[in-house]
Image (cartoon, rainbow, N blue to C red; front, side, top):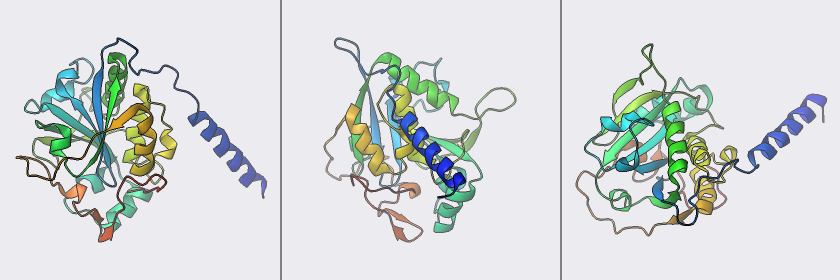
Length: 255
């Protein structure tokens, strides 16, 4: 083993050890403390965070006002070209993994309960303290790219009804996926998650079990306004390739 290889190996171990360190200030609710329940929604290859709009203070994340018609907001982050494409191809997936041209936030508002709106998804309910939710919302707010006037940059309609895209900070690549970003948001809220390991939905959901509880799947019945957005691929197809379901305990998927 050459010197450069040894140094890289040692650096990886040090980085991994740092990621495994305890969360400095856990924000999970203490006995008798108010709870704010959020939801981690696994869509097969991508995960989003769902937050009750009524729990979001204007000062922490003003963008929720862009979606006044929804009781719930789902937030996701990803590669700009792949996420926004109505029919993403394998080529777009490879470009996102290796030569991404930017990232975006996707925000969607809806009224039904999350398990009803996403009947085919796997969902964890996560209870946070008020300060934990505040930390998560600060993380989301700080993920927005901003123009010269300091305001976030909207990019137009999103994938669902009542949704939109915004230019985001951070570079998407093979080892910094939408699921890593979601893990970072949960860690900011106080969940003891190692974001570096959460490349795929399977590992993200597995780690999040430590601070959440599974919701039972709803019967697949039509819900007015519920999405079958292109990016979620009801058949879990990306570029003609079948993506694995997300409840695998040890599988690592990247797209």
